[in-house]
Image (cartoon, rainbow, N blue to C red):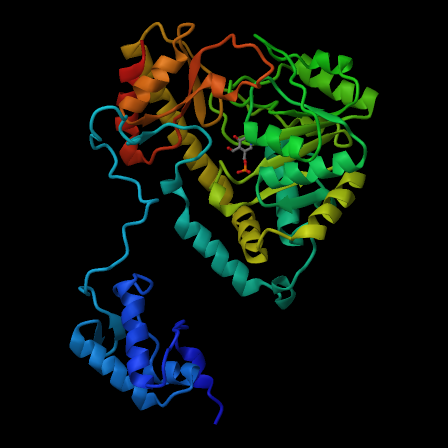
Length: 474
Ligand SMILES: Cc1ncc(COP(=O)(O)O)c(C=O)c1O
């Protein structure tokens, strides 16, 4: 008889020792429960299925289960099967070293409290992830997916998603997007890594970066073997005219629509100038459009890529608009680069799961993405307004900038006080970053301030975080 029933049980890895089957099985199960490998409440496979897996008689397993129930290790109830008992013998494992201590408690003298409030920038409110709508899109996508969607497919990513993104990016961000020029990647960082690799292979020596930005991105380029000279910065933003003086610079990485983390939009003359530089030098502009959807007081700044799709690579991500855990991002590339980047991606790994891509495509096409972004824009705008009002009330001298867009704002601090303010924040259990954390090492320090990620906490934590922030301002 085919043992197809065996496939109905959950897999259970057990190492049986000795020749006494029932005793060996009981020892192995006790050990799995005691060590915590089998959590309280875990449903065990049926005796028939486990017997088939272990190659023993069903009665042997049934007897072992019955004895462990009698000993209190397991419970057995009609309809809910055999489970690990909720109150089992004390575990012998020490608590995990990685377990954080409870938030907000005093930890004695000499050490700050662990962060109870999180205003670090870079993360949307994860509690607002649109679970129900995503599930609906996922169900629909899986139902409609052709069988080939579960194969290896095209390293550029699913055509359904590339098609949906091409429409969305043209409509919402002014990107000149054709599906064949889009490559899906597992986050902006993955895209940048691939582009860095391809540029290096093309013989590019340096990729210029802005004075302020994420170390992570700079590091990825350097790991690809590229130099990363930093462009200067003034009150109007990045001094793109300096590119002309950088010999061997084949590309520039920019957050033109919303400088990260200082928050301004590159003015129109500099937008034109950076594209002109790329045209004249044969270089590329790598446009990091990480939070382009979130604009509050003015019209969205269109993508730079619209000015010259052959010289600007547009990189977008779902990390701010949906959630970084999805690891879904996209690159819109000049034709020849699209081929090379897809080859570089395909040579290592396809990276983004096809069902996730199909769900995202459905999410975009159904209008759920627009609805979610609109709802989040309202919510973040409200928080931003509350932040501005609270700072004005508690610390009228503190200037708040970078508030027209995005998920964070910059609070200027009196010169020389950033480190002390960060220490005071840590003592109050507030995680927040200083502007100088984002300054490239070669750039002199001219600003002191806090980068406040007002989207980060869930609604329930927002007011507490805001109060803690106001408590450390001058
Ligand atoms: C400036 C900037 N670019 C891009 C990203 C998105 O990165 P990823 O898509 O890898 O999550 C972030 C996320 O924090 C960011 O701050």
